[in-house]
Amino acid sequence: MAKELISLAPVVDKAILVGAPLKRSNARHAVDEHLLELERLIDTAGGIVVGTLTQQLDRPNPSTYVGKGKLEELKMMATEREATLLVFDDELTPAQGKNLELELGKRVVDRAELILDIFAVRARSAEARMQVELAQLEYSLPRLTRMWTHLEKFRGGIGVRGPGETQLESDRRMVGHRIKILKERLADVQRSREVQRASRKSEFRASLVGYTNAGKSSLLKAMSGAPDVFIEDRLFATLDPLTRDVMLGEQQKMLLTDTVGFIRKLPHHLVASFRATLEEVREADVLLHVIDASHPTWEEQRLVVDDVLADLGVHDTPVVHVFNKIDALEPESLLALRQRMADLLPGSVFVSAQAPGGTAELHAAMIARLLLRRPEVGVRIPAADGRMLAELYRSAEVVSVRQDEESGDSLLRARVDDALRGRLYRLGLLED
Image (tube, rainbow, N blue to C red; front, side):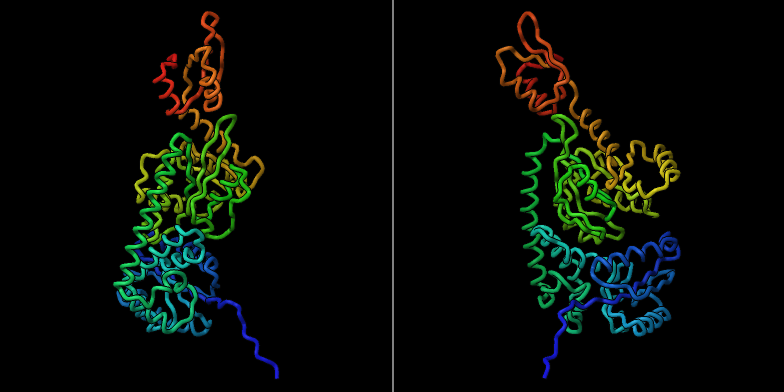
């Protein structure tokens, strides 16, 4: 008698997407684009979309978010298409989530919970896992009753994976205790990062920021030539900051850092927990705001990133807008974009991380920024001080050099950073 084979294949959630923008908001004009992005999030989480449902609301129903008629339609659609998951594009209150699950007999998650689930799956480093766990616990704290229902009825799937799942049997006191521990550990991580940043203060630092999947990692790889930069055409491929050297010329380099991508309706718990990581953004000399020029709603995405940066308190750092993926544009469209941005966002650069030589414009812009940061000064090095002369050649960009015929001193014009300029001033070696 043949033994029955047990399938070990993972369960794939079949999801129905629900978009319900308010009639008075601008979201109703972009609901299709928002649901398309939500579908990409489902794909990233490992599920498939089997249907969508939309409704324009005067105001959300306080009990079930959507109206009774749409609720019945949603129930029928879920049954017909054998859906296992219903995903709302807007954040649900704990009561709305619980009531919807009771009415529909299916798991219900909102966009915030879906994003937290993706982060839980894709977190790799210990720091990222702590950050995601903290965000999940803070999100689930007011929803513990509903989470207990999850645990009783369902076995895994989108919205119930990762650290959140391991804490479901804990009561509020235990969850609160765990949150306290995680915050203390992340505070230690932040202090460690501050020490690391202090050691790099003399370096020219740039941070890549932007909407998720705008091509930040591809740009880091193209600029640095580092083969170990992970690239994937999915949302939130990068969670941990990654810094690489980028050579800008002889004795000229910058430290370029890739950061986690942003997205509309990013859960505020997630922004708060990743604040230590995003401190890299606040400490940068320049921010490179990467924009997917080929995306139909890039202007909305730009504003989303600006809002998150404002929430992080980044106001004074210079920003260079980097329009990526220009190889996907027609020449006429690219020309029109350049002309428009000359007025709207002066100083913007246009690149392709995939095309050979496609980052030359950004490379030139960074050299110009570096030269502004390292002004040219005159230096007199005594003839007997060969060590200082060697250090100047090693740490600065020597523009010209000549000998003083009377003293034999070396007279140099060199570009130096603030730290070296201060040292030369204290030694009395500056000529001007």
